[in-house]
Amino acid sequence: MTDPITIGVDGSGRSLRALLWAAHDAKLRQCPLRIVHVLPQLHSYATTGEGRAWEASNWDEGVTTEATAVVREAHPDLDVISDLPTGNPAAVLLAEAEHAHTIVLGAKGMGGFGSLFLGSVAMQVVGHAACPVVIVNHLTTGHGRVVVGADGSPHSMAALAYAFEEAALRGAQVQAVHAWSHPGPHAYVSAAQDAMAKEHLQALQGWLAPLREAHPQVEVVEQVPDEPPVVALARASDRADLLVVGSRGTGGFHGLALGSVSHHLLQFSQCPLAVIRPRE
Image (cartoon, rainbow, N blue to C red):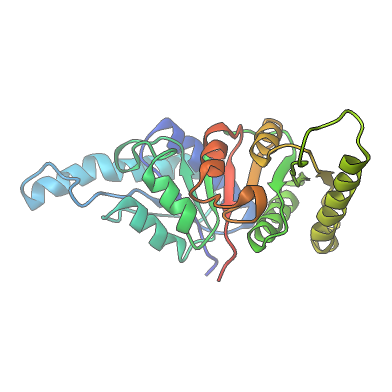
């Protein structure tokens, strides 16, 4: 069976936006959609088994039932599965990631996903999931562009591959951004800066070459801005349907999973953010 797109839901509006993104991606990839609502171990206020069952049927099952109904209305032919696992949300989602194509989460949820966007759950899942993780805050469509950060690391190459896959599925353009910073003061005209920019462009073209060959139908735009990666990628996300980065890399992407770059992109990306790790 094809690995599913797994979406963590909690009944919030942001969760709904993530659900719509996940369902659309599952349809494009022709794979199942797995809807998961995590119940914390100390979730129940009831003191009896009957009381806990009543709580589950009246709230928790309602969350997955509503989510399933929304998806089936939008995509009647999509294979939809739902589950109500109990446990630590981050641990449950990391376990789900072992058998998922992608984990999708909404920003700043309720309940077990409280403050998900900036909290420990999101950072643990983004930093340690065995599959791609997509965090959906702003749901954007119509730009026809997938932005991806590139720095030549294995994690960056995995991000590039994911970006080309998404672009091919969506009929979108890939905007590959290799940001770099010139050492020393900037000048309006500098032969050294120009030479370095050409070197970085050549490096980017080398990383893109095999993916261009594998996806000849995908239009590619190359950018090598002389500015910090966070600035370049956050700016580019304002005109994109998806921003893709590697979870750890060299240079500006070092420590992305747990460091300040990650926090900035999670906070300021103007489109869904996909964080990719190479599969072991």
